Image (cartoon, rainbow, N blue to C red):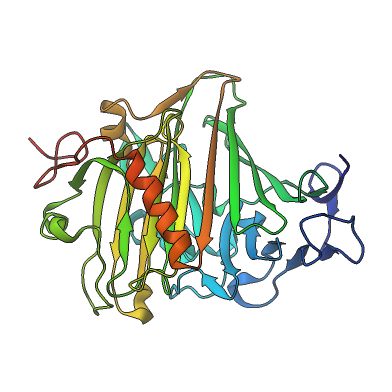
Length: 390
């Protein structure tokens, strides 16, 4: 097995490549096919000026990674199918233009348009004061640039394409957390795997919360689309969401001004603790699945925002170490991780696009095999999941 690795950014040594590309014409022969590439470019103009984009293309699926925005996934295309959502925020926003404290701590929303963005690392959920510390919506990691970025091509198996970034979330008299993230695909595959390691490189124990805010619009979300999962428990986040509990797994078309809904889940997995969820369109011929370990990411949130298309018609499939509640509530429920100095956690998440009824049927059959017991539905917000419930 041979591999070729190129450093695209390294702050320590002063390396930064404005553009770079490798493909079958200037790279190794890969048995999975010849229509693969890794392409790095830097966006220019507007709020996106200076945002680095690294695109992995397996020949079947391409995905754009944003090292400047915490190694989030901006958008993708799989066999001509767009894998994205249409936010009012059209282009990736450079973190210099996002003030997290705006709108009472909701400034994170001014940069929100990714297919997948992480919420964390020290906290996520709503803004507020936590024991004297002002925290903002969904944390800092999505608005922090990587200080080291590399791309790698390996001839292992059909060929492996990957990009790795290192992002620090640290400050004086604050937690010191480092995330090393690798986004990987196999040549000829329709799947992408994200592997993250978060380490406490400070000298004091510190808290960690991590949630993968994975967001989809058309063609997966549409009127009649369906969410499929091996549900153990489901509870609405609030009273408004409770009114939609009987249809939590189905989607309406866009409706201007409709409030968002959210549902909290515990899921069932296989003998190794792996679980899978699926969003499929109304016809059942286009689907998006996610697979991960419940030992690493035990909490799952489904966010539904069936607003007008122009206002961001989107749903969020969100595995996490916690639910996106205020940190003090999650701490009380034992869902905030405490890392000792030098200690780390690892997470892995695989997303895949399916473009036929047969492929989607196979995923649904697998999910049914994970459903060992009937799901428990809580009619309203439950104290296990939501704050302010007696």
